[in-house]
Amino acid sequence: MATRAIGLKMHVIAFDPFLSEQRAEELGVQKVELDELFARADFITLHTPMTDKTRGIINKSAFDKMKKGVRIINCARGGLVVEADLVEALKSGKVAGAGMDVFEVEPASANPLFDFPQVVCTPHLGASTTEAQENVALQVAEQMADYLIRGAVSNAINMPSITAEEAPRLKPFVKLAEVLGAFVGQVTEEPIKDVEIVFDGATATMNTKALLSAALAGLIRPQVSDVNMVSAPIMVKERGILVSEVRRDKSGVFDGYIMLKVATAHRTRTIAGTCFSDGKPRFIQIKGINLDAEVGSHMLYTTNADAPGIIGLLGGILGRNKVNIANFSLGRNRPGGDAIALLYLDAPIPEAVLEELRANAAIESAKPLSFDIEAG
Image (cartoon, rainbow, N blue to C red; front, side):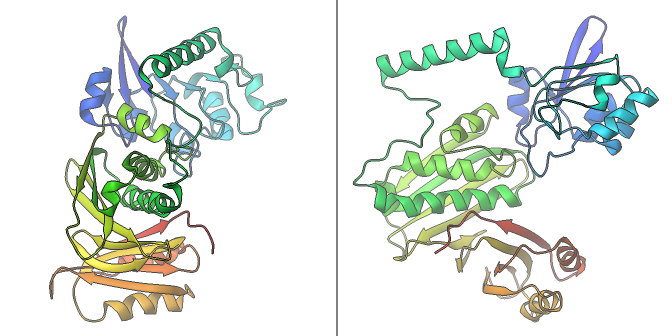
């Protein structure tokens, strides 16, 4: 995402929350935190999709952290750079120049950036360059050759192959796998190193390739909003995340369930779920703690030490703020040990309510969750 000019050599530093240290080394870049990147870079280039977390990532606060004379290049998505803040940075000399192929409003028929001689603007032509067209043609030829010679299919526009016979049985578990991945993706803030997905009992006999792809898509969607079941395994591989799969015979009370284990440099998270006869996904274990939680579009996940009064505390704070609870699930590993709560809410929890929860010493963590759950 950024380069530093050192003599005639170019030193590349990069920020990517999913990039592992090992993969960064393989790519020949130094992984840094975002504020360090802002402070060190001579040139900053953006290569990220537009998400709620990346929108306006280059703004006045970011410019204040940069060195004088920095140059900005955005050929990714309009809106990653706050254009009004860039204009002020150009006027002050903080930014020496910029290259913009994408804009907040497109087509960009008029824009204040057009008036700066040190800014190069192009009309969203990135995919139309000679190099891009040649690369696309080469990739298509290689993928067709792989299919005709080896039967391999990559970068398909649809989901992994599923037969008509297995589709009705598989569909609810595809959603379950996606939900499990989405849970971990939303609560994990460190770079992910390893992912293991365990198929237990009946799920081990299903099309686990589709289930694995769905889990990976859910896992990285919080960072890459336009990921799908086809692109997810490729994106995960590119980030240096190791993925493994385990199939085993029935080992518990459920006929079949899926468990996702995700490891970072400092911790391992596990979550398991299954589908009941109604076809709806349910969480059955988090952090090794058993529970039975219906999955809703809007949820709240909290952790705390097992102690009296937590249910009343959560209900009281949400009640005072008129946040309605549709369902409430609890679990603990032992009396007085670690405890968790999953609350299914009627609407997204306001940030002010989250801050009130987090300010209470009895609550160790409080995370809002959202899931794409079909109505009905």
